[in-house]
Image (cartoon, rainbow, N blue to C red; front, side, top):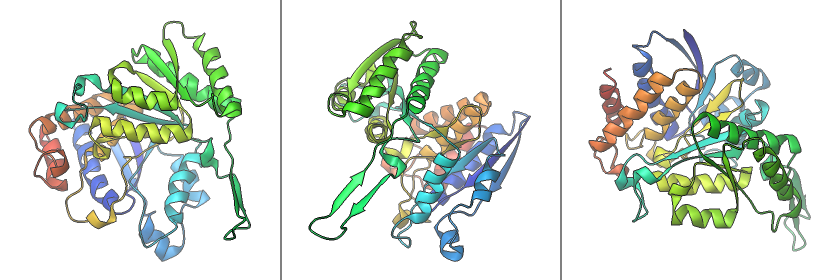
Length: 350
């Protein structure tokens, strides 16, 4: 078996933690008989400042030939408007039609859980965030900008096709992974039209999955329930904006952005995987960044591309490293970025 992955390390600590993720990935697949080909792309702030190029259409087409794309965090203060980050990240999501933003929320150690009455066993759910519609499509504008009469308009776009496919993906995942409940979250009591569409489609699709419990919560109530009792959730599906907010809350429940992985997925096509933390330019190159999110993202990519065994081994190695406090300072350890990656590799037998 052979797999081809495109690697875009990103900016800042993205470069540091991507290096560790790739090191772990290679160690995990070494004994499986799988040949892994990695092709690195330079796209990031340095490349943009040197060439003026963010992500060309030709490069985007080339990415479609890979089994998956791994993308590090993007963002650099030398590009104040973050044009390169927006074009590379959002451009990849939209041009490849990666309509599922899949965010697993799993706590690996009791000490990482910020809720006093709960622990690692209580936090294990996934969020399906719609990834190509909503308020993030960039439709809108400013009228009389910079004057006292300025008007700003931002349009939210919801299509029947877009809503139905993300809702159906959430139910399919629940059924395939033994999850018993899908919760859809919207704000249809206030956002009448787009979120009314979400509510109607959710109930219609739910009728086809009688073996999976369906539940609806307004997004404000969902946020309260996530803090009150996160153990009640299996699968959550929601729109682009609310998913962005909910998954940051979920990341804190599992121990912070430093352990939060994600996938941008279109079933049957090339998908893109990225840790969800920022590029933290002040920490770049200082061997301080936590690489676990990047490593767990690599595991997600392996599982999605048909390599569940090395993916599970990586998750197990991260868990063992945490239990041994062989991790960075933010998680209670005293190791640097590279040494943390080495600790995971040792537990893989590499």
